[in-house]
Amino acid sequence: GAGVSQSPSNKVTEKGKDVELRCDPISGHTALYWYRQSLGQGLEFLIYFQGNSAPDKSGLPSDRFSAERTGGSVSTLTIQRTQQEDSAVYLCASSLPGTSSKQTGTQYFGPGTRLLVL
Amino acid sequence: LAKTTQPISMDSYEGQEVNITCSHNNIATNDYITWYQQFPSQGPRFIIQGYKTKVTNEVASLFIPADRKSSTLSLPRVSLSDTAVYYCLVAPYTDKLIFGTGTRLQVFP
Image 1 (cartoon, helix red, strand yellow):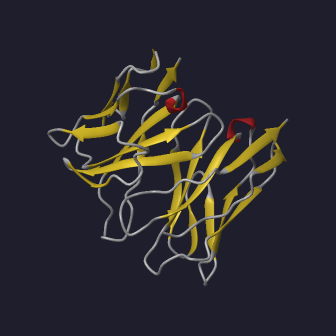
Image 2 (cartoon, each protein chain N blue to C red):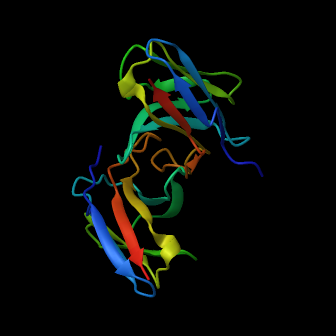
């Protein structure tokens, strides 16, 4: 079946503009995650959704970042008043719940959106 | 949340076995150990997951000692296409995964 898709694949914007990044998870996956990866760095957790609710927003770097998920499916990550340090690859992943409350379900990642803020 | 420590980089040659060890001294009783692989310009891909002892699949083996304070990912007979970054993660009580900087494996011909 189809994997996780993200759009746009690349985005170039000017400092101060708002951007929206979209993630379409695998059908039936209730959990959805956003990560950020700067050049040559590891992944930085941003936010996690279970269904439409976000029990963990601890990774959002500032109040310029927000995310929502509707219908338990598509998610949008919005960055307001972009700054040059926001330039990175934004990755989305989805998973089924783990088999117990303590086990993480395998996460399937999308190809990412490469954001460049000039 | 358990923190993991793994080597920054490793080099190998085609056909060799590669073992990447990860330390996770603060692993909790019900945490699982998961490894992901990431190629340049792609998102990470699940490789293997285990709780204790040994797990093997078509791609790799995962060795976990009794104290579970470390784990070793074993890649048999690597090829050039195994050049990638390998992340060791400990599954927390929530579904959030904390990725470190990973181990950059370079395979030479």
